[in-house]
Image (cartoon, rainbow, N blue to C red; front, top):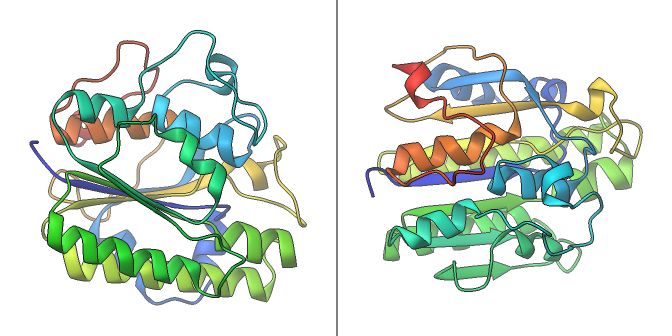
Length: 261
């Protein structure tokens, strides 16, 4: 692989929530990499459809998932995991919400770990620690780290933009900081949200639901550069480009790597 990449998804993180969580590391994230606070989610702005779009670079209209219940695609599209596996790469996934496993077709992962967010406190932190242990030992080519507490324990349980919601974002950014400090010299790190939220819900076309932050930190990205016109569809092509993996011909998004040069 040309480069190794870690993709971190912080479920339900709104840009204004990111800015208001009072974690001092948010400034370093914006200074160290290229970023946008105006990225676009998918319609519907729901977790599984959004993550299927992240990994398959097609809209929910094409992949067929419009709820959090998995349905096989009528016209299958190769995922990022499949493309990496076909190229001989080694992928791992860490997740705190069980349905997210469906973004990876069986046989495309070398390692996976699931901890349900309501079985213990600080699930996101535990998953981050497990991921870092595995990364340092096995040096996988691609790692997907999915944090769900922002959505479940923050937004749905307490409401978007409440103190509890902002605290969970603060904690999630601490996890990002740890990843960058411990393995950021070996991996390009991409951080995204899947959707935002309002009141105690999401899934609509409201700007609060549809607008997301995205960060790209690594040697291919200009520090402090603000990006525009990005959506979830651009993540798989960008990761594939960084790794030197062919994009699937059906993918609709674009790699932002060339735009950075």
